[in-house]
Structure formats: C-alpha cells, structure tokens
Length: 302
Picture 1: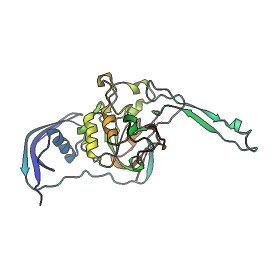
Picture 2: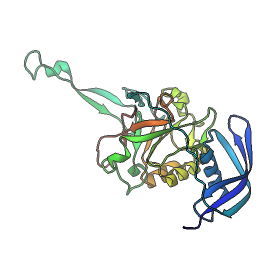
Picture 3: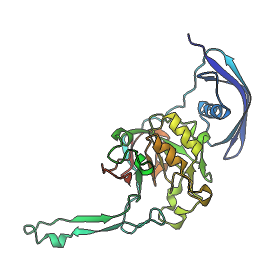
Picture 4: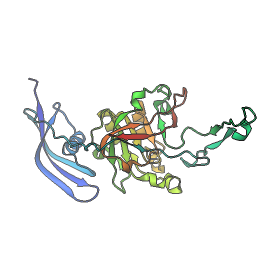
C-alpha cells in the first residue's frame, strides 16, 4: 500500500456573519507530504461544510504518517419534482446592461403591415432586426473574449454550456470579495458554479453599475480552476472588481477563460435555486469570430 499522510493542526475560524470556531488537534487526510496553510484552510472548510467563513488561522501544523480516515460528505437536497427556473434578464429596446455601453435597438425589418403586400390575403409575417453590442442582458464570455487565441462562441464545446450539474454559492449580504474560503465547502468539479450575491435586484438602475458590486477574487478564481469547475456564473455587473482600486486588472476573467471555463454574467433569480441538485444551461448561438453573446440561462430542477 502507498504511504499515506495526514496533518494535525489547530484552527481559529472567523465567520462573516459574526462569531467564530476554534479546534485543537484536528486531523485531515492529505494527498502527499506538502500542504500550505491556505490549502489546508480551504480543505478544512470543505471537510466540515462550513459556510460564510471570513478567515481561517492555522497554527501548530504537523504532518503525520498514518492511514487515511476518509471525509464527510455534505447531504444533498432531496428531489422534489421537475421544473424550470428562468435565470436571464429580458433584452428590451433601449435597456442598459453595462453603463457606458450602447443600448440595444429593436425594430422591424419587415413589419406585418408591409408583409401584407407580399403574401396572399390574410397571410402576414414579421421579421425583426436588432442592433446591439454582444455584452447585453445575461451573456456568456468564452475564452476568445479575453484571449486572442481562445475558443469563440462556435468553438466552446456544448458540454461546457448545457445540461451541467449546478451548485449555488450563497454570498452573505455586505460581502464583496468572493474568495476560496467561501467557495471551499462546495463540490464544484465538473459543475456550473453560480455565485448568488443578490446584486441582480439593482439591475436596470444606476446602483447596478456602482463600483462596490460583489466580485470573484483572483484567489477564488484560482481555486475554481484547480478544483475543476466547468462554468462560473454571477448575478453581479462584473465577475471582476471593476472599481478604480482594481487598476483595470481582470484576474477572474483572465484565469477562468485561460482555463477554458466560460463565464456567465448578469444572472438573475438565483434565490429560487436549491444549493445543488439541478442542471444549468446557458448556450449562445454558434457565431464564429465572437467571444461574448446573450444567452437564455435556465435551470432544471429534478
């Protein structure tokens, strides 16, 4: 049998909604003989299924050569029947999604009245025309949005966009930065990870584009990449910090899209979803040469 290792440590946990937790001499299985305090903190949070963790301070860390004892799974939600949940904003003429970007213009290319001159009596059609930037409404970012050699809308595999098992990460009110400690309790491998911040209530108002919106940190994006997330979505105006303090850097976009992980921004209605036990779809049309486009995002609850 291969040599197995565990780690013994003390930990102090601070929760973002108040209070704390202290453990002494806690033991966890580890895959090898090396683990950083940050990695151990995330593993500890995940093992216990702790939510709303603000900080974990690790002390007295000691490696122990002993057989693994296994982990404890977090119970899954029970099935309650199949239904569909809408997660997209409606695209309307003149709407504002991102402040500073032009609003869509929706008109008739062929009106019903004009079509009557082309068809038999009693037969009419309407053909619409829309002019818009790709970043309108609820949309998906593919690697080509950030990286010149990345896959575009036509190049991203359908299995990255449709019928994905989903998980919702609830972000406590008042918390802006979503880091690995908030993500670590969740099983994300092969899943659509949806960050529920509640910021969608401001959509269509000046508040929505304010610089204090919630976002995913570089640390959180790195963890999602290493943990094998298939897609990441958020109900905020940007998955990155877009405040002046960010200096224009976009680490969440850069890291996720470099790893081939699509990003869905401007989701809504995530409060209606359970923590897991649903399937998520956000598939755009197959347009070559574009990296971003609106989607009809929805979840199927079984």
